[in-house]
Length: 411
Image 1 (spheres, rainbow, N blue to C red):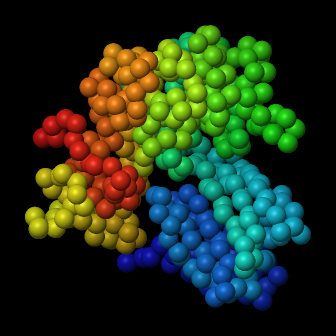
Image 2: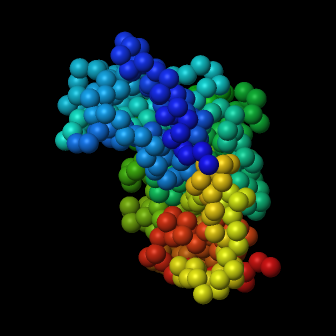
């Protein structure tokens, strides 16, 4: 069975360690093999016993090599050259971009000083052909359909909620591509991002520069005078930005943005805590789409026959166990599945709860009463259908919430 790091080790073994081109070739091999393995991030972490090289695949970090410690400064310096960073500054964090040829994966390099030297993380963005539309994201049909309806609106806000690494930005870019394709240049599409991660044809994209006074809030206010019809804000981080965004949504602009929250109702609760008036939430927001990503079981998985095995407190009738094969390189998983929940603040029960400034638990109950299928419902269905495992659900959704079903399980 081929391990994750075996192809990289094989390529490294063909290189001459005494050659002046060794470091350049080693970094090229690392990035190429990481892309082939489907890694989203590459970590180079210096330690006393060497340089740990890890890939984040499907949200999980895998150490694939431990290289000699003396190589660490040169490997990181090579990444800094590729990203147009200052190689002689090792005492400050730096961030840059490795720009590939058209159609290739773009990468963002971030360096950070640590006790044993500079740590580097390379974020590998999805290739242009991946997740290029809402249909390619794997949302349940009812969520994809509602999202398409919202994208056809001429005003209102769509929030993509979730913690870091949950795919919010990927969803935002997919929506922008759909809008650009449908508009064919007849609609003014603009973004304000920090930073710009992917260039989207047909969209006017801008990156904030806080050091120059070009913040999300000031950028949004100025953008309103640029005759926009669709405004995408990379992330709402404070009350001032939120107020400007929702005012834009109420004055004939379609606003798309991401927001950090633990669930869909939690996004509304956080906005209320930030001081956003309930009427802005109820009238200004079209949809809140919350999402998390869990690893998908490989086809080599087997059903658990032992009814005594604990499903980690999940109320499931059956579940599957990862096995590992050459196709999944022994991990038992291939790719990721989205667990999503969607709410509409204008729905009757939820709308009343928002106006009454109810707590998050009450907002979620009201959303369920209005027909929302929760993240736990989606997770339990995925486990029973062999899409993922109880352990993976707990890894992603945690243990702090009771995994109760809000509706009968699917047959």
